Image (tube, rainbow, N blue to C red; front, side, top):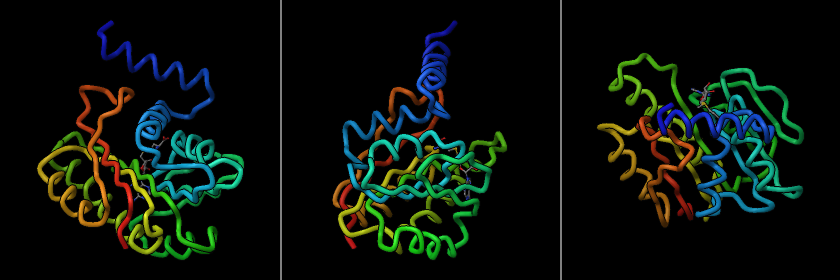
Length: 197
Ligand SMILES: C[S@@+](CC[C@H](N)C(=O)[O-])C[C@H]1O[C@@H](n2cnc3c(N)ncnc32)[C@H](O)[C@@H]1O
């Protein structure tokens, strides 16, 4: 078995053992350890949350005093104490749903959005970046001043443009590739701290 496959397998097995719905859970755990994107008591919006690995981790990190809401076009099995809606993040009516659940702005937005991949990288990359721009539209309504965000990005020709766009909105933006992310995959994570408006 190649080292990369072994690592992939390691996180899949670990997720199974520890009751997480996806190995992606470990990406959020690792990034949060370094950057504290989510802290206790945070209100968290998870865009593109299915099957729910990040949502589970967000719930643990936010604790009893926090609140978490997840959105996905796909069905997500219930997660205790989480409000899940089946919807499209390109639909701005999501904003009303966010306010009706939280009653105020949120402290963190996490976006692990992936389009249905076609296999043609340039197309998939462009679609994925477009989803991130849609997520920032929601973010601009619902993220509280000094709040944090996390975006997965399929790296490609529009990544720098997206980074420059997002950089203007936060005090600090960092790029990371967590260990649980396959080396062969071109996904990167933009950690955005301290929303400015
Ligand atoms: C990689 S998965 C998310 C995995 C999740 N973070 C976890 O830890 O289980 C990406 C998700 O983005 C969702 N997605 C893609 N486009 C979307 C859209 N327009 N609105 C809502 N969800 C979308 C997909 O349905 C898919 O479930």
